[in-house]
Length: 342
Figure 1 (cartoon, one colour):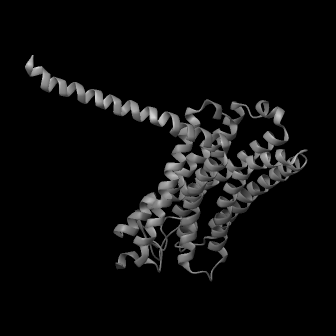
Figure 2: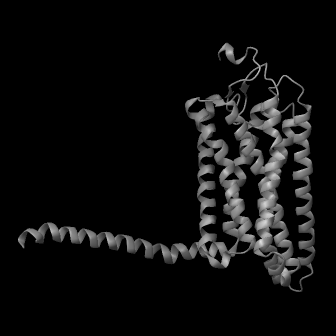
Figure 3: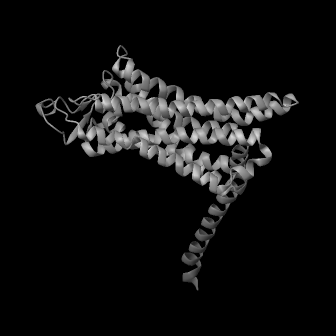
């Protein structure tokens, strides 16, 4: 690395992302599962958006929130993976200072948005199970729109201080980030000024936002479980519990790796750095990949609509396409062969 990257400077024009420290020789091999996870996430979430859009019976609060989750799951991996792959494949780790702060903002903003979406989905399940007769009157479309807007504004406003705090600090040691992307704490640790404000604010977002979200989700599901166990028959309990199981699986897949990675960044000083970086990548790729699989497999309406699309619409589309192509070829053949004989 050149001396310009380690000599004193006030504000760097660029940062250098190293990738996964200690695993540089395995970067190409690590990129393979990353690409597979990203491809599944993109294909699965686009499929969810497509199915909900074309099926009128799915135009309800639960599926509107699911579409918001799919959009978030498209943005999160896309915000990190292209740059990560350029590091793995081409050793191109240079990123503009403003671009680094923009990437930081999008990553953490959509993590907070996704957490808020899970709270909104938990509230929807609570109303649907505990107050089924009032569900359509409580969660009307304007109410759902306001909840969605509140979730987005909360994420955008709470994360806004991250890039501003990072920009105002001097970086007089190095511009080398031992990471695959501009994660908040990885950038803050490079500053040569007092970083306690950034650290404390990051903890505030972690505990007072994610912690409160987990608390509200837990309270919702306690009430939901009480309502389920009060149902008269076993079949009714199993059917009702089945409608919530997919949401519970998605919540666990999102919060457990995220909380573990965030706490390990601040308190896991004895953990190898490469493990920090791998965990940070996994929680940004794992949940977006699993969510469409979980909801597609566990949500009966989506599963049936997807099967109907392939079993009925698919053959019709293909037969129409190939039939039209055959007709066009026949007309061209007739023009070429019969035309001159006329």
